[in-house]
Image (tube, rainbow, N blue to C red; front, side):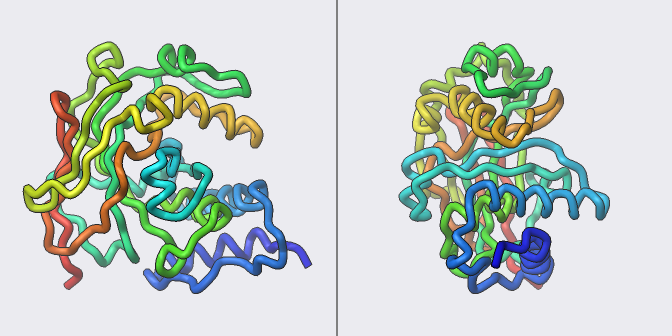
Length: 262
């Protein structure tokens, strides 16, 4: 018996649409591989694009030790970003959109040229970056109680839930991503603090790692795409009825109101 890629992708799509998490995604006796998980992810994305969505970028997750410790995984995950997953800043986002969401803070990269291959370096990432912006990522697993392993989160498109971008773009030369402190606040109260140097030493290096990893699947990042390198702090569980703000000191912030479902 082998893993049914199409059926597994449909289970994830149904869980997201209904906001009803799966008890488990696959039978572990099938011994699924990382390649199997990425095949499920690509089928999930294909079905969403076929239904009218569009690929807008790519994300890396769980590369910081704080995130691996938080969710009990020991390898990074990665996934496609879809156009439908962007939310405006300073507006309301309802808990009805998600299952059990957490919030992360990270710098977002916008590319000015294609970037990919098995030998991408930090210098290549710098050369390919148009600008960076502060970003909040909502992560949300379609597996009940976040009882996930690497297969689950990879198949589930890196557990992505949504993205909110701040309107303070900077050139890489205008920020120091090797030492950029950041915090998340709930109703003005600090709940998490970190530094971009916790993202693989520097988020630039994290994106180079991502490029080399997905080159194994012949995937290349494209000009104009939005790329997330991973959170600089441990994700915080979102609380309905809360104003959420992410802030990079000396750079900019992003806010939104997380509202209770009607």
